[in-house]
Length: 362
Ligand SMILES: Nc1ncnc2c1ncn2[C@@H]1O[C@H](COP(=O)(O)OP(=O)(O)OP(=O)(O)O)[C@@H](O)[C@H]1O
Image (cartoon, rainbow, N blue to C red):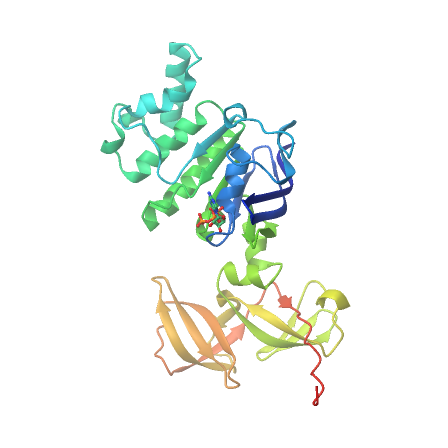
């Protein structure tokens, strides 16, 4: 069942448009993510769903109720929404147990105690129940904030950059833990972040925003392996675009060989690309495999040590640059030639029509 249905949502601050006719849905129990560069409007969308911003067009439905449209605006406290913010926003004068119990006012003392005990157990803080926020680490404070938001069993949980105040290692651990907690409780949630690793760790489905629009809504896997356009390909993961020539319905030739796509090569308005068309082919660092036995070689231009792997920037003799992720025990010097071969699972091509040359005397 669809729990959140955002249709043709249009938002603006004064005369400044922020979001333009955005569609976004979430099924019950699904975790979505709004991902995108700073200023693309993620937080504004979240605030509109929470009821803190009025919409300029379109509508937002939660369950079977329209909560926002140009004529309807349900106040935030009537939307059954839980929120987790970047700065935790815990009450400093209440201990962990009291913070979590805060939104449970109408329940009996015994029901409250049982609910808080269950949540303390869920977020792994049963031993810290009597502590005050200043006596907790950042990660522990964020878990309290999550437990507090989940306590009244919201129909939808909104999380705005919840991990950005944490160090990288904790961010990774907590994001996996938050996903586990949301799945255990069957909570429908939206995460807002500009960090793709966080988006991939937490979400079932990611909407990548840019210029007030969703560029692609897809699973993390498809966003990486089947980017819909150049912006998505560039924002998500690393990679390079190399020139390719279409040599058949689903085959494209690039400097290191011929790739076979599982779908016909698309030339936009022209439909399936005719033989001879030129396209750009996306090559991810994991598409280029280091292989001493390969007849194809490239020169090491740069290298970035990443612990388990080294990310090499390579140059072919024809000047084309590539990225290759190689286990770090293959430690090559800059300027060295190394053997490489293609190992491409998903062929991603982009076609942009080349404008005809201007007449010489124009
Ligand atoms: N209260 C406001 N008044 C006017 N303009 C605003 C207001 N809040 C945000 N904006 C503008 O609206 C646009 C979208 O802002 P928003 O905070 O939604 O982006 P974001 O994608 O969440 O960015 P970030 O990742 O930096 O938080 C930006 O250009 C921002 O400057």
